[in-house]
Image 1: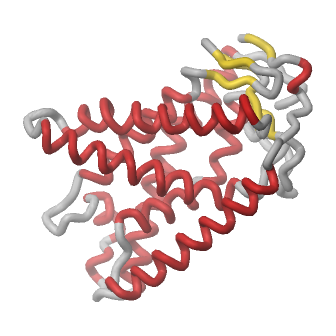
Image 2: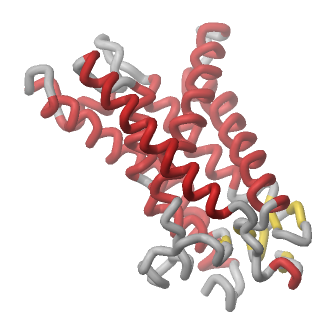
Length: 258
């Protein structure tokens, strides 16, 4: 492990207010847009469900952050939720809105690329295609996003890293870890979305038997709840669990991310 440069421990958080306002504005636009779409269609689309599921996993960010030694800039407005077991001591409010925005946009790109790859290689296992297409795509999207936020704006940084890292005066960004388990979450979750039944819906939606209700809000609520359950399970098992376990077993104590 290597330690963040002392000049970056304060983290200036340049553009923090713009990130907060922008996240809220885009999230509200998604809410209105997909709300109108659902009213017109009579059902929730896959992109709308990706945004809903993305919103539903925001709380796990702070567990993954603890495992990865992520330190937030104090320039963000913070929740009253302070240190609890396996969470970072500071938790920005904007994360609630940024999660549906990020997951909606990332999964739109990942699903598009994966569908094309599956059509191009129809004899290949869909799971393998997702792991070789969606997982690297999410890894690359996240790496580019963090490069701007960490290296150029100092909005957050990683106090300690495993493996190679981009170290600047404004912050430190790991290149491979935890990006690899995050990419694995993306690949597996894309596979689950594309593993569909004869009606063209993800098979996991049958968990709560939404079709026992006629078309309407009850059926769509159960579909959305199925997505929330599956995404929370996938995110917790594939990202949070390994990073928490690795820090607990191999990590060092940190005064900044206790």
